[in-house]
Length: 399
Image (tube, rainbow, N blue to C red; front, side, top):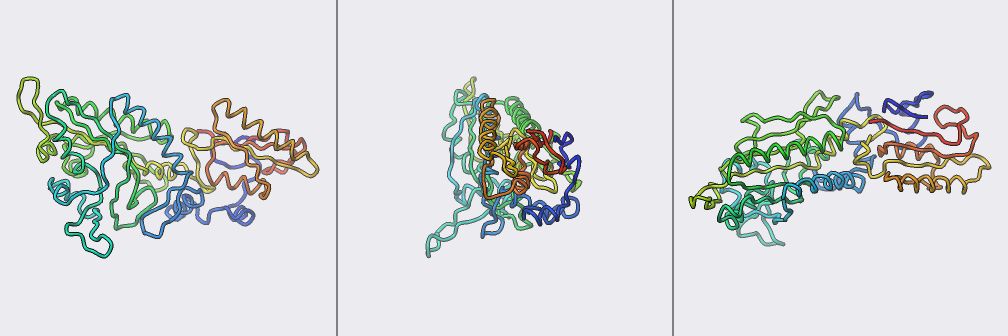
């Protein structure tokens, strides 16, 4: 039996949420339409995306979420390397003198900056900030490394964590006090080069949302009030969350102009032997992408994962019945997984013998696996319709 519309409603019987929860213990207590916030919190926990931590606003990212992040990372990292961007890593800590050097920038982040003030029982002589972003961490060294036009362009990216101490309603993935992201920081000899890269990166962000997360976005330029603190202009991809009627910023690509170059004295000698300042960009996307995906695609049975980012694209479930050859059914499941794997599909067989098929259906639906294949003997009754099924019973969703 196949669901062609992706709605996950059986063609024969639609089980009520409370009935499913009573039978399996896996159902959701809230619906997406009736209480979006509580529904979202339940889905990311029950779908094994996160676990709540004992520090408010910080979350444990479980393997099911990290696998999605890694799939996007693999794509994006390969694409920026084609653009000659190199990966690096800068320290987590920022000295206050450097952080406060660029006035507009630090004012934009000041309420969110977390500070280290003690070492053991001793107060630090000078407090140390934890990076909310890395412009002020990296650019003092750009001024050291860039001397002439042959040192340009300088294109660096780092995959790291940042801390922004949100005070109002932290939300997993969407607004957390610590999150994962990539941040690219580039320097050019001309504004034209910088402008070109801003749009190249913005297009990669569009591809992440539309090609990997199956979420349509709009590319555009932010208003002066919304632009990055200290930058020249900001572009972004914006998504829409249907159940809330609100838009959400998906990723940003900033042209910083020459403001940071002036503050940090990032100068170079051009081809005419004249002193000039570089033009700079910074760009980033974060684990917010995962939260947007959950909000857009999830339903009242849990997560719904687009196939390109799913750690498991197909789950194969055995359906033993009465005196059937259970081992033979298990062998057929394993053989099916082998065939799918050979074809490049990420497939697994759920051979746990301490759970019923119905429990497994609900479990994998909660985790959002795109396609389910059930294998049982001829004459097995279909779980949803109660009618005799053929040897193969297929369940799935379309994108």
